[in-house]
Image (cartoon, rainbow, N blue to C red; front, side, top):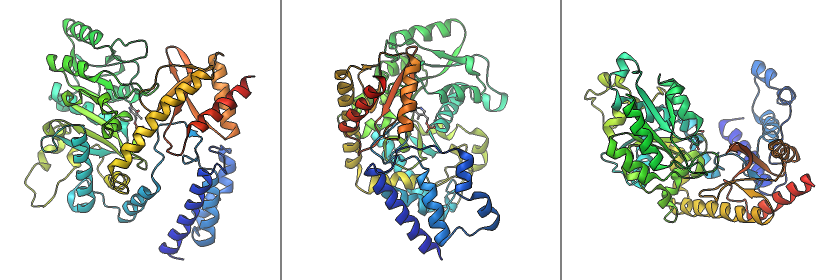
Length: 458
Ligand SMILES: *Cc1c(COP(=O)(O)O)cnc(C)c1O
């Protein structure tokens, strides 16, 4: 029993898992009770006595994978988590074995160089200069949003790092924004009440005219807007805020524009869909999750700033002792991140890009966005109400029943195990929600889902 033979065994088990999930041979989701699972996995005994290798490892993996949610099943339409390119998972193994905590260059020259290359690629896709722009990879979009808003606070109120957050700072976003924005405001000491919501159109997209009026009001009442946060795209419906007019308004008033592109910034890889991100050239910061639409294993989120100085000044405390001239041939990321020990997250995104090249990801984004439009048309034809014409790979729809009916439908489908979808609130109503992440999901899967729902509601 060795590292090599255990890996070979794990790879066989994973290949079998992938094959069966892809062929719909197992349920997309099963949720055994936790206590039962803990027993079946024999966790406590192995923690005490060891022995997780060889045959025991094989049995453990069989049980573990049996109770894992199958993202590679074509019926997986639930959450915004990538269906990872399996060959990109090799990077996670390499990162785990080498364990190069690359926030300082000496702890991972290769990992730091790969992260730098991935960030430069992202900056270029955003139309920002990799020379004057900057970035860092973090564990998820939520942490990335916090980091970007910290940089924004640093610009609006540099004294906040020493003296605490001034009482007159506010953040402007819309009701469609992800909860991590309100959380970041609370964590940064503004408090959730300092989050102002700009008016939107009926589909929840920020209204630039309403935004301009709100900014005037805030100023007239003596408050400073630390940042405007635009969605690209919003979480519930997957719709893009009109970035260009929002950016022009922010520019005219000297206000930081943060674009939360955790999910939808991947439109930047598509020649067809990158127009959704039009105006990004005028923004100050962008968050872009590779573990959503770039087929990268969880987690890998980028914080990007158009001006390198903004990110380098975000964590001012560290700057004093890290900005000395170290005699080293590489770059330290540590002053740009909350994390100290930092995984080589760039390797996973690099593998996801490099196994087939960026054109493969462009084709993937185009396919998933087109599938969402086709799915919406199919669901409408089948008599469902669709919340809004999809702009990304997210579709919200409902039957003509009550909100509770929608949740009951989701519960029944999840128990049946052929389809796994999520739900979201929008416009005061509960919607069934498809996030079409899986390149193996076809329109026939959406048709089968529609049939299953009709059978349930009859
Ligand atoms: C998913 C998402 C987030 C949160 O990102 P995590 O990586 O899940 O922490 C933030 N904003 C938007 C718009 C998202 O779609």
